[in-house]
Image (cartoon, rainbow, N blue to C red):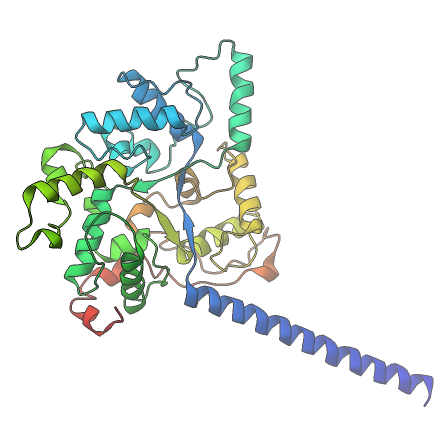
Length: 375
């Protein structure tokens, strides 16, 4: 065989091998995307340490000492929050719940993005400005933020809504237990949401509970406290034994932290797309808050003057263009072409459809559909 023929044969083999490898890579990518969509991904929503500092300062000003205003949800902050919640006839979770934010009058800053208090540390007790700045730098560097929770009363409302539509959550107890996870997953499957089983913004919107969950009255005051109480214990007989039921309610209110709030991968994919468009390489639009997305989010936050947590914080959502994320309204009207000038990673991006968790399926969709699902 001549040298020329050997070269031609080698070139053909290399081309075939390259094509096979590319096909394999594409198949793996498609398989991973399909798996992401079938299993469902979700990313927890955090409040940055700047937002936590605002809450600490507000609690301290009301007479509930959190100790240092340091942006960390430590034991003293949890105790102060719990005491304030008890005084306001809220469920004393000690966690950073949506009703706590509203009761402190901080919903515009915390829920819609904490735009008024980036970085700074009001109410600092650390002495000199230099020492305070050093402390803030440390906080910004090592804090992931604090998870935003739906209160047990809000969880009970969601459980009641699922039950009313035919999806059995078991006992309406304010806990996101296995029966509630399965009911939520089945509901999500039937309504075109990613079946994560998580307590997500899209699920709340689809159930038509955005206003009850994200409102000033939710979970506060005597009237709201009674509105979503657990159902009477079946063990107490028809109608329930009032004393036994009240004891159970008191226990639930005391020991349940509520449930962390999540965003499904439809919303995350849109965040990844915007980060890519703006020149921050978030990688594939797979809806998974992976290392690439974390690094991209960190650089974006730093450039925007936000605390570089690398997590999905409420102020990141506002800065990325999702100020109404709590309504399931993500990037309505945005361009679907991610391969724009300045994108550092065009080969890892693609196009996406409008978010399935936008809440549009909640209108008129799902009445009576629960009966056909798996319970």
